[in-house]
Amino acid sequence: MSTAGVTHAQTTDAQTDAVVRRRLPRRLLVVSLLSVTFVILTVVWVAARVGSFHLVGPYLAGERLLVDTVVLDLSDQKVDSYVERSIEVRNLSERDIKLLGAACSCSCVSLETFPITVASGSVRSVTLKAHIWQPGEFEQRVKFYTDYPDRREFLVTVRAFGI
Image (tube, rainbow, N blue to C red; front, top):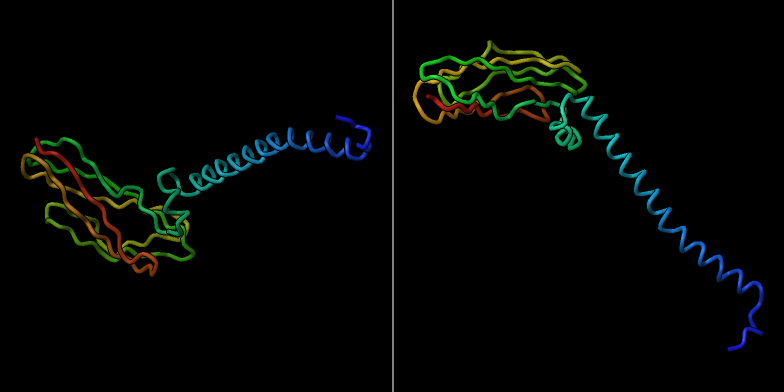
């Protein structure tokens, strides 16, 4: 096969194409690494803002009233004992939010006096007191009501095992 008809420009184009093909995977790798770094930094920044990694998803989904615990596990407790635990309610909205009240599935769970105001940009602890009155599994639900239009209510499940 003769190369007499191949010009210098065609040879240079072929060499340039070979160089570009070799550089393309490097560029793709660099772009991929930068993208992953951006995502990690974003998640870390949001976690710092909301106080916990498990609240990143709800925050990125647009929620601004965040509850740190939706299942409050009291573990093993003696029968006829009273156990107090707190949940944290975080208000990342632009206005104060009031927790208006709560409905419990059993009178064995009691709460603070309502209404409770959670100021904009702040965190408020809400204490729940559970009476473990019988042996075996204990599971009660507490539905909280708010004046926040984007989240009128939220649910917390209280679990324990009476021994």
